[in-house]
Length: 138
Image (cartoon, rainbow, N blue to C red; front, side):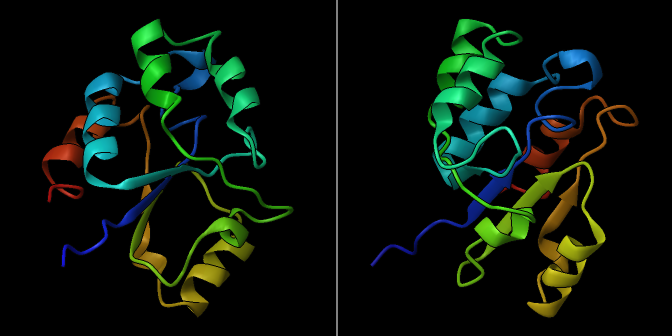
């Protein structure tokens, strides 16, 4: 029986959009790759149980092909901390530029702090392609 893929949780601001709403470099290649290898979920304040608002927001910044890929990402919902939406029963990666201290504590409580991948597109504009070729390579 084939093993289920890991989950990937992704934020929008700072991960797929840089400061000022500019799409990250290599975004289409990145989204195509993770959607083919992982179960991918939004983990952003711009999505609360329904991706319609998320896609409407992204339509201001992304070209149609990128928007189509983003539309394949599953929604999550949380009230306060993003960690509320994570399935800790499955292996996962969480791509985000910044975490709250309470989220760090929750990851540590579950022994999953290493599942967080800090994305910094200012320091490393090509980080998404590096993730495909290294950390997320299956």
